[in-house]
Image (cartoon, rainbow, N blue to C red; front, side, top):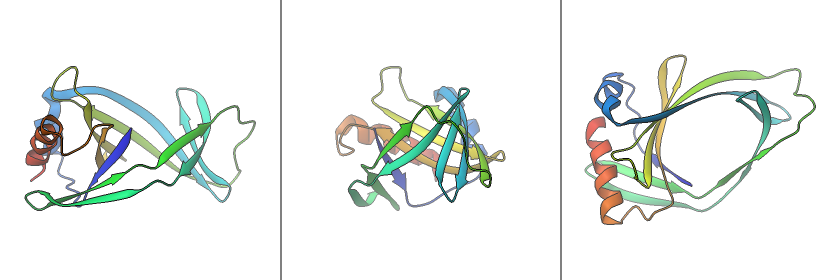
Length: 145
């Protein structure tokens, strides 16, 4: 899945109320940031996060004043760790997923940290200029403005 980032972050929780009817699923995880790397605790498993940089494509004025960045980087989770570093910064994340319909190929994700909106993005493997994908993205972007 590619992440499609948005140029502006709105942190008003009214967004969540408006999106509630599209709620699809929720994931909770914890990141540990250390000098030795980034680790993720998810479902009682510990993973080391390795990021393989990919191409970034920018779409200016995709919809009204929204610019999008399509990030094709890959995140690889390394399992079977025996220990984590002693010194680290901890961040708990609740990731909310929204879809307009059951078989949608695009998901809108909102991340909450300390019960505040800290990030949001789209997840898709489809071309964002595809008519149905663009229609779904525009629907979610219209909630943000």
